[in-house]
Image (cartoon, rainbow, N blue to C red):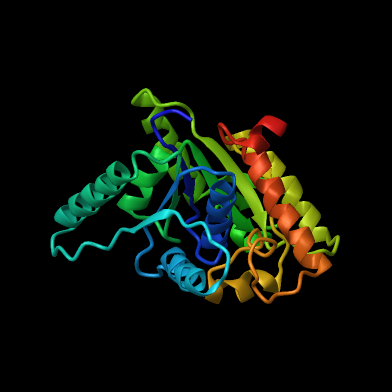
Length: 274
């Protein structure tokens, strides 16, 4: 790895898309591969990723085998009364966090489910941008507006336009292109017509606004069950968690491995294999 950390941003302006779950599993996958990983939580109000690591720390104190942990920083919202001052204060906090994590191989940033100056600043820093997207027309609307027949994308939507703007700004500053990947999340196992239509429309959007579609996660209860203990599916074979592995867990773990392989992150064994 180079001296400069590779930055992965997990972003979507719609809440409930599974950003923190995706961020957590990517972080643990990289830690398991022996990388030094830093994490930044920009969603201090919700704080899901931060609580995930707090829960993980508690589990680490009681389990017999070591749980890998990142260097984690949560960026608090500014309490400044003036909007401009608040923006500057939060930007400085993010810059300081990046400096503190400057020796890491990877930095993973979890963003809030809303538009903000801080979130935009994170997006422009992304070497890889991961956008989890629940498999529904409602969530697809964040990326592209679909006509009333549900057959055609009429134009890019608010989040896609924001990402496009940050890409232009990054290019103007001489940065490398952002590798934008969209992850279809909470997939059903049923071969429903809507599921096929969303796949087709996403394929059209991918060509139009320039993102890759990567393997996603099937809807599984296990993701929610592991949160209170701060564990991931990648941990279950390494720690005495008291959770018996079922075939669905094995399949879910493979989905995570497939995702990390598809990300093609520099220096990873999975990237070399792919």
